[in-house]
Image 1 (tube, rainbow, N blue to C red):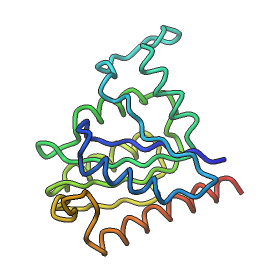
Image 2: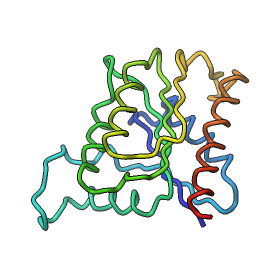
Image 3: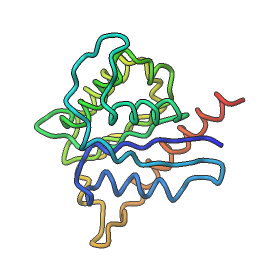
Image 4: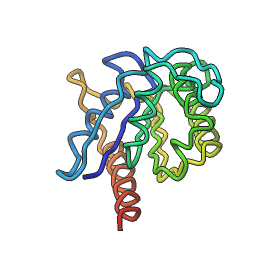
Length: 176
């Protein structure tokens, strides 16, 4: 069984990013466990801890889920031309842990524009030695959903499927 951990960069329950992650969850094959991480809002502010010092329990749960994941999907908006603070805080908690080293990661930035957050996240993931299998920038995301929250733009759905398929292929290559 393979495990994919999905992380929304937005804490809003009805965010476009969380909707995208829920959609991707409906595409999972039977041999994949898919979990949308729900602890970002309770993570404490990042403070470097000394070796052997106990971590806050919320951080220990995050590390455990990251370690159990064969791959990650990060789907995030852009706030004030950058990475949402809560997502950056989560990523900061992985510094020095090796949690993301060579881990396949699909990055989706879905926002009004998103260019700056997308570029920053690619740089951050590179610094953490993650293996970005695919990256997708979806500008003007709200115009691509209908009132029921479904994607109405066929090209956006096709691009999401490409990102999804590339991530699954990366996991399968590792498990061969």
